[in-house]
Length: 114
Image 1 (cartoon, rainbow, N blue to C red):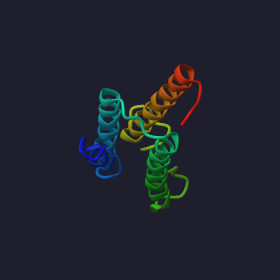
Image 2: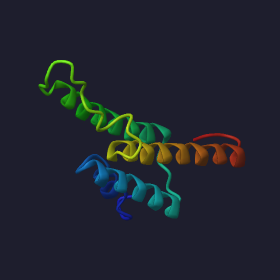
Image 3: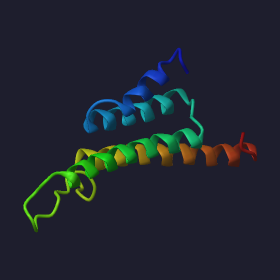
């Protein structure tokens, strides 16, 4: 994994802007698909949870900003279909789903999961 640079690509999934993180997650999926070195489901879950926590913290920051009474906090991250946050979450969910499919294929091919 280290010789292929997987830890480096994975590191970019938790750094930079939301758009950069989404691109890194998509690149990580492409790389592990190409080399067929799938991470564990726990690692895929960690990737999603890290992304979701980051998006939630950004949303909380928006909600804490002072605004006029009666003005609702903006929905810049969650609930906005084309937002960079939603793109990041979709990219890591795609990765998790693909890792799960690969895991199921291994179970069907070998009969057990290691």
